[in-house]
Length: 331
Image (cartoon, rainbow, N blue to C red):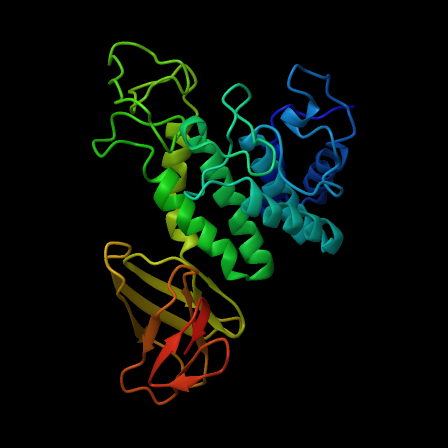
């Protein structure tokens, strides 16, 4: 009885359970999550924390070990907690997310400061010139945060997704799409040297984007994330629609009672700070549009032209044009 050294099948098993209605897949995911951290894998030079087999998921206070594996495991555990209504497990994951962002995450959203084991360091061990910040760890962090956002609705999860998407995931491939970063170091002490286009680069050794690395997990992971970006933009519930990320989009959805809603988002965000949302079709009955005001936007303004109902912020202040603070502003 053991687990795979690289957590990732757990999210797939939960999705399979959702798609098929077969509870056995959910139970298999539960078995893998609960077994992790009980010392079932052999010890290695970097310790069992490398594959999160040092502390049970429910008892851990922070993400540790290999940054990609840690986030994949956390993402799968959130899925499991939601499907089984396990508030204890979800609370443990919230604690780990909070502590990891406060103590073990770079200003870019990048995670993982150790090159040798592609791992988190100790609290506040975040050297800019030795940052590993693997691209796949950024992708995995987005996966973990998205699930926490769906589970709890807290805008801080959407804030981290935005920060990580723009500063780690989007910056990994070159503009031409022919080279990429495996590691996203924050500070270079010497000018970078282009990688030989005919050579396969050892992972993280290239000081500039390289055409290919000996381990090339990042390109398909980035491509998969880019292809699924639409899924991170908005959510819907019984009360209305929530916009979490800003990009040009047309959103068509239905509320729980079947009312159809359609929105168009026009923006050049983040190059400009202006976001325009037009309601293409709505409902005669009231519903709520919630718009995330990023944590960094201390002076945002919400304007509702010709609004019959005023805008309001989290504190309940209302006006046709209202100053709104970080969090969700509602119309």
